[in-house]
Image (tube, rainbow, N blue to C red; front, side, top):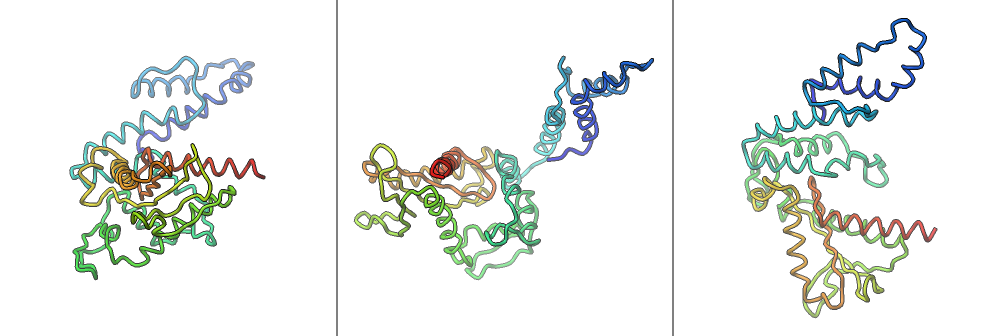
Length: 285
C-alpha cells in the first residue's frame, strides 16, 4: 500500500540517514557544515508521527510505516459493508501479496495475462468486475463475480484442484519422499484425502494431506472474515481435521487451505511442511 501524501519525506529521510556518516566527512571542511535541510525534515516528521530516535534508521520502512498505518486506518474507517471489510482484511493480511513475487514463467503457468491481473486486483480492491447476470447453473451472479468460487458447475473446477494437488505431490517427490495421489484412498471408511505418504512421516504415522480452496467473501464466510482475516480457512481446516479424526491413530493429517487472499495458521503450517521438503531436497543434493 502506497500512501499518497507523505511518500517523499520518508524517502529523503531514509536516504539521508543511511549516508549520514558520508555527509559528515564531505562537509567537514566546509565553513557551513550544518545540515539544516535534514533537521527541518526530521522536525516535520516528528510533528506528524512522534519522536525521532537518537540513532536514525537507514531503512525506509521505518519512516514509511507511520504514514502507511495512518492511511490504512483512514481507508478502514470508510468501509461500510461486510464484503468490503472482509476484502480489506484479507488483502492486508500477512503474505496475501506473495503472488506478486512469483516469476512470470509461462511454462509453469505462472504468467498472468491482462484479464487475470484485472480480476485478481479487482477482487482485492472490492471492485465490480462484471454486470449482474445469471450463471448457467441458475444462480444469480452479482457485479463482483464471486459466484465463480462456489459454483459447482464452474469450468475447470476439478482441473484446478488436481493441479494444486499435483504441485504438493511434486514437492514431496523432489524431496525424495514417496507419496501417492488417489481419490478414495481409504475406501473402508469412505474418506477421500488427496494423498498420503507411502512411508511413516512422523511418530510412525503416515502423512495425509487434503487441499481445499476457500473464498473469504462467500456468503457463508463473510460474517466471520469481515472481523478476522483467515477465519474462513481456519474453519474449513478444522472441519477437515474433524472429518479425518477416525484415522488419527494411523495418519498425521495436514490440511492445505489455499485462499485467494488470506493467510492463516493452517497455511503457515502448510508452508512449513513445504519448506521442510525443500530443506530435505537441499540436503539430498
